[in-house]
Length: 446
Image (cartoon, rainbow, N blue to C red; front, top):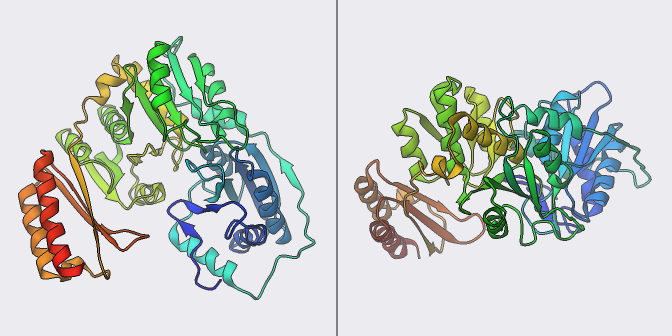
């Protein structure tokens, strides 16, 4: 187990029942989380989960491991990831742990960890926990039994989320369709949106332990789009399995992704004098159309690696207040330092009320540039900047794109592939430019 990486882009993830999500390893992870805390008192650990059938036994094993190290273990039951982040920060909790595999199918599961400040662990902390798990000098006693205290935290979390809704009765009677992905928001979303005055149409609201994300939710928005049009809704909101992100649907049935949400929220924050640093944080996957649209408004855009934890770290480092990913993770620092699909939807609805504009009109301000992706199989991973033919080709492409396009060249994390992504104003041009680099790669590295 020495040197094994447990944490990926968003926590620990795998097939439930197999390593690292087999019972003994899960218990060991629970214990390691507590051992990593620099406390001279009894630790308090809060657990929450989505609706997967494996969630309950993973919760028990995590609790068993944590209890073996003397921790007090509380459970909020089925609750969105941002709910655990909020309760951890506001309730004097040392660690918040979410059991979820987000948008993945039911047979997968995962473990996400939040510090007592309600922030996802950074990579340094993750590496330290991995080292503790790998240390064979300690073990979790097989006889350990954990007492889990139940915690009703949904009410306080919903009060916090509702603060992002517009004041007054701006949402009264607004017809909204919600796709709950048969996931964690089944315990919260209807209650929240009805509390702020919305008339709610529900989809994906009957979890059975196995139907989470099944042909529903943020990765399958077609059903929601049809419902929005059929039911005459002003908008639709599709959540993922753990509720930390959302994809929106306008009243015509068109998808509005995270890039469009970042543009409308960033612009509104700027207009109201609330956009700290006059900057929006996004990742390398955001379309250059977002960068150009923000630039035209005098707003800077900072890019990070993929993963909302990287967005969070950049925001914390510089005090930025709006950030997120194209996939629908949006972080609003006034609310939480993690994505919250319900809060994102309320913030966008507040923009609609404050501007008097429909979602389709707001989203139309983002002009997404054509994109092409070419994958080239390579025999070895070499720094492409050190290969003259490839470096020269990339330099020519960057010169051709100038500031009206974008080049991203990176190796796949799982396959011997070099990925060449180009965005620009014309599809045929970006395809030709990508092939120019691909030819150089094939000659040099294939």
